[in-house]
Length: 267
Length: 267
Image 1 (spheres, each protein chain N blue to C red):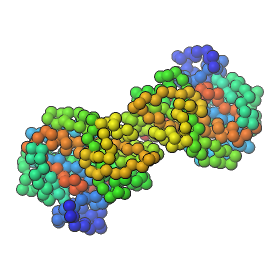
Image 2 (image 1 turned 90 degrees about the vertical axis):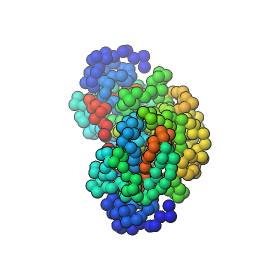
Image 3 (image 1 turned 90 degrees about the horizontal axis):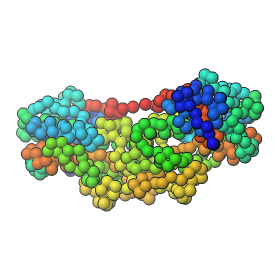
Image 4 (image 1 turned 30 degrees about the vertical axis):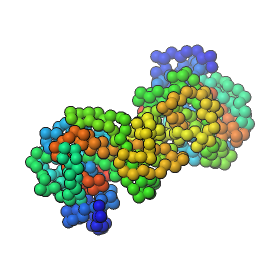
């Protein structure tokens, strides 16, 4: 991304983070507005919105819906009062017929009256809770992206949307895996509990050292891989559906909201 | 046990179950008073009570204390109004200097003014919740006792009480293991979440097919062993401490209380 740094002090909440982004910050949002929910963004034409919503409803673990805009509106008032989805993300991805065609820093010129925007829960929220519990996230320790895998488990299909369940993987020893299950179970709105742990071949992952997205991380002898449903699942389904025009966040460049992560905890 | 059957209709709550036991039923309590907490019982001289209580406090997962009697009293009013610990269990075990010497059906003649009784949480409560969630308990399917193992993990010691953590094992596939962790986490008063899952050698179990107590169960190719802290842990510590006289429940012959299992669920 060749991102300029952001002013940590000025981005200690969602309002400050979005202000810096509107002022030109175009890098990753990790570390911005700690404690606040960051979301995946999917914008597509209204013609596809109902089917995509059904796809999310049928697949709540990979596609937890945090908010949906009114048709044609770039606002998401339940996530923050002043959101403008056309300028509030550092970088976007524009997909035409399933192919990536651009990565602009704003989408004002592309906005259409028939767009519907979906904000979907992202693992940043539960990762914050895992770190607060003292657990190590290997991809953070190793300074890379979390490894993600396409599985042999099909997502539930809805209309034109179908595809494999995509999972992210974090290795833990048994005690930490149990703790991670407890913690992430508290956050159903951001992928919730793991979908699998242990033998990767049981969900169709042939080689754990070769993720389909992100980067491989090391797994120690006393550790097991733990798999969570991943927000790449809807992206893969959208790409396969060949929607004429879709706009999403660019990887790591999320929608920063005014909702606290703690507000998503169910107990 | 060569147990006579009990009248299911008359034992559908704790009061009915204890009445049948007082009337002479001397078999296992499994299936009695469904929905009500059954407890492990440990009775020892007051001289050892404080140290044993500290041992329980230091080891809450294997030794969750549900109630403690007044010195010399066979009542446990917080668990049921009319409990008489001298006659309310179907069968007891009497230990002298750590050795089993008798298995009587009442202990009125043995009761002493310096006895202190501890009721400790037992896995029956969380097993009921697992079954209600549709999970299979292999030892029930195979009609045997749950397998239990002495581990290489030491329990925290307190005074004269020390020994290994003893665990019970239930095999599950990954999805059911995750669900079982969620469910048992809700029941910290009855052993709570598992202490380990996966590779048994990591906790010093050399051969999973040879439990130290109970019976071996089959583990299918797609399953992993899941281990919970077990109420045999305090029994092993008591035996090793060489307490002059201890009375416990006989295996499977528990104290049936008036407390509902659901009352122990933390959320």
